[in-house]
Length: 363
Image 1 (cartoon, rainbow, N blue to C red):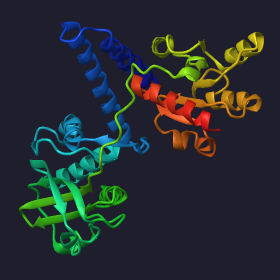
Image 2 (tube, rainbow, N blue to C red):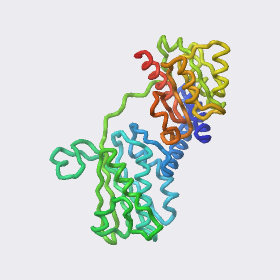
Image 3 (tube, helix red, strand yellow):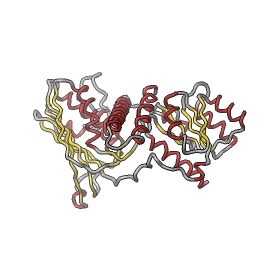
Image 4 (cartoon, rainbow, N blue to C red):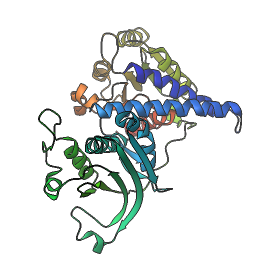
């Protein structure tokens, strides 16, 4: 949580720097490098959370090759010096709609499986390519549908497996390891993720020569372009009064820079109690509440509940550096509050605010 708050400041301010610097300048290039480094740190945090199963699903348009490159440093740490990692990636793969964390988990689980099959060391090869299945192609393949797919192949030079083992490979709790050395859930998790993504997985193995997992994932069309961070709010948004409640000073400053010229009034508070006191003393109007979840004293959603008693249609945007909100605050699913994870980009914040105001106009 604290680390994501730090990343939020770095990511947001570096992005704001980029919009204010002349093209082709050294300063712009420097700001872009800071931004890239912050995004890499964000990805690494998300991967670690995925590995500890603390990361919720977040489907987005992404490139499979990028996910593999992002995972490379983790693979090196996971496997160690005895293992060679080879990347054989097809250039210019089409974007696909998937969850970055889930794809990382597939790669890591299969890498652990490969490492165990090569106790003395060996080679792990990750390759990608595009495949297209016609109706005729799909008929004999269990789980296949016609359409475009991306194929991720993960191959090891390990001891291989028998047909009997291969047929039971994805059964929950099935393992060939000694008692206490494995849960037998790693490959069943991989199978579940692939099925959730409407894909399928095949396994080729030969005793003494290694194993190849081939994962087919469907390709969807790209999403609409994200909102331009320089968006000019519409008339009703310009007249809006926004209350921001955040106890981290860097995040507060970043949001202030983003919103300061677009809205009639933006009020900041460091706690729910301070926000309520300010509203009551000044009889202030609030058209949108943006609040962190973890605040000193009253939580952000509790503040939202309090304000909704007076204004039931108040748009609410909750944010947090904790990425396991579905388990940490399961009651939020019963309310129509919008939730955004830190660190978020400038465009994500602006487009989310725009969406909230559009929904309010429809009510």
